[in-house]
Image (cartoon, rainbow, N blue to C red; front, side, top):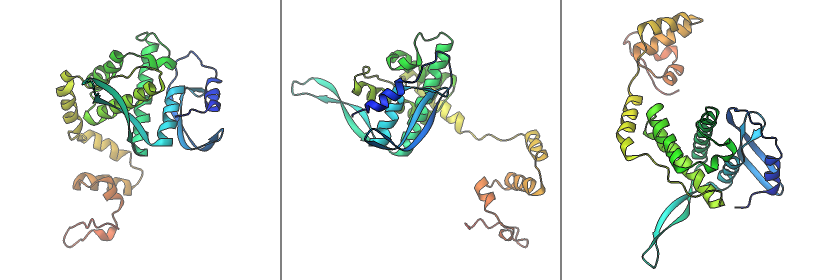
Length: 254
């Protein structure tokens, strides 16, 4: 898992500003660092000019290898148990989800620092304790944001993969990030609530119709509300899909 010295020098050559700024990702494609060809990665930055070292390295590792490290507890010959790390394949689509979840977490940390809730610097987020990491999952994502099972599970997997990668580098100890037992019911209720159908009120529908620029937009909205068609189904409709005699709309794929 060699990390390019040129890449390291580039990241640390940037001046780190103390102001709190939004953290975002910038995609880099088809470039070379020393003798290493990088097809795709993300540069994770605070503001417009302040790269954050370790999540950027993690992104480079993911896109170069398409694997993450997962903890595995094994029994030794002495009947004792120890934790080992094994590689697990990961798709590019999942990598993008993980990077987004890590950026969301870093913005949460930056916000907490600005409110003096955490006494650290965003570039030292690697040293945040297991207690604070689990508070982010259980108190913030589940209790405050009411996130459901799928979203929280992705955050847990992303942070575990990230901090396990850091542990592999020797940057920190392995963290055990998880949904607390007492949060199982809450996260299930969040999922049910988030999946519930939400209907537009009559006043909202009227307001949308008033914003239509022409008859086509107005007819499209009305037809969708009256028939329950999805937007992609509406977009594929032609005039001859409707039979004036039978009153039937043909939804055959064009």
